[in-house]
Image (cartoon, rainbow, N blue to C red; front, side):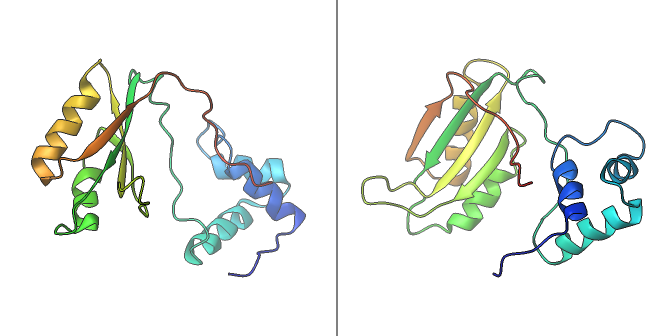
Length: 159
């Protein structure tokens, strides 16, 4: 894929759109005002990048710890060869306690191929969800990595 070139104004729009959206009834109009462009230019740029597959979606990010979900676990799952990892991943991703679900390449020393990030309100919630997923999918082999603290949580900044 070739490197995309953006004008200074497009970079300003994308920098503002990639940060916290303005807290008001017309956030894209607010971004336009801050970037010195019209609201139609902001929406046009974002829609164009979405239709080209550069961005997938625009959505809110829940700060799970502030919302009361202070217990987290990354679970690495070893989906056996007789199961479809994408089908297993879809089952896992459907759980509301899971914010991220990834299919990854394996390594001889680390054979796990599905990764889920599970969030819970109470100690033991993540382990309970992992056990329920194991029973639901038949995927038993896993490594549970409980979070002990958050060191960084920021969105990417491109401009």
